[in-house]
Each structure stands twice: as structure tokens, then as C-alpha cells.
Image (cartoon, helix red, strand yellow):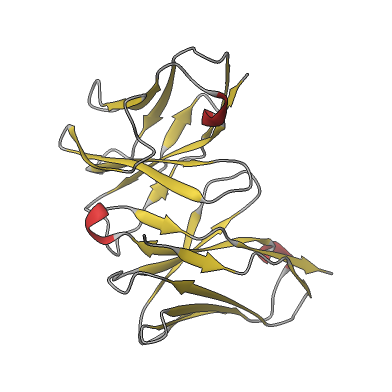
Length: 115
Length: 110
């Protein structure tokens, strides 16, 4: 089965630093997403991306966050000036079409620890 | 605000048992629902979609009751490998995103 790949699997950073989380969605997919899960909490939607622009974003996704598709394969999440509460597992996902009943493929996640 | 609520468990059952999970949702406009499975510190994986007519996939049966805004998952003849957290998920509609419940933890014992 095709996979969404994320790097790194673990990222440790100091508070106030910038981090970039990287994802390679499935090659023929058109919609890309970032979700996060704070330890012991729900998986939460951050942002969806289509046709090189953000299509939806949650209230969590404020000016501290940005997404980019710098080339034909990568999809990145940048977190500026990280805070302790940004510590979470960040999941990238992709789907072939706009999500309704279509299957959403998740990557294995990047565990971000902000110290 | 759209929410999906689940009993967090844990449900501790012996192998071979039948176990049922329930979930309620607050937004009647949600059109699509899913059950995902999440192993410890892993990504969520789609288990099955949920339809009003009910659907079955092997040992798993899902039901949706729109009038009561209630979703269920039944697991028959549970296996050790079924041990995981089961996430009830609704489609956020125009927001183009999934609304996850906090999950129900299942532990199947020998």
C-alpha cells in the first residue's frame, strides 16, 4: 500500500526556535493535511492544502504556523518561535480527492518536543 | 462547536468476547462518519466507514443512528491484536477536516 512519509520521526527543540516538519504525501494525491495530537488528547485538525494554497485551517493554526509545498513532492509545516505547548505528535495526511468518504492516509508522525 | 464524544474506557475483555463501543456527535450536519484504530503512539488508521444502513467487515459491525446522533462499533470474537484505541470520527463538512473523538481504549486479554 502507498505510504505518506514524515521526517524526522522525533524532533527536539528549544523554546523560541523554529522547526520545519517534512512530509512526502502519496504521489497522486491532491489534498494534504496536518493534524496534531498532544499526549493523551484528541487528534486535532490544523490545516488542509490544495492547489498550492490553504483551503481550510483551524483556530489552532495561527500566525505561528505556515505550510508550504516547496517542490512537487514535499509538504512542510513550519512552526515559528516554538512554545512548550507545541509539544505534540504531528501527523501529515493526504487524500486523492476532497475528503468526504474518501480514505485519508496518515503518515507515522513527527514527535515534537519543545524544551 | 462540533464535537464527538466517546467513553474513554478502558474496556478489558477476554479473547473471544464481543465488545461494543458507542459514540455521540453534536453536529447534525455531519454527513460522514468513520471508525479509526490507533495503536500506542502510532498514526490513526481507518478501520471502516459508517453508513446509516449499517455495515459489516468481518468481525466488525458499525451502525449510525442519525435521529439519536449516535454511532456504534461492535467487535465479535475479539483477538489479542484488537487491543488498541478506537477513534470515532466525524467529517467536519465545509471545514474539510475530520473531527476526532478522544478514543476508547480496548485491551483484549488471553
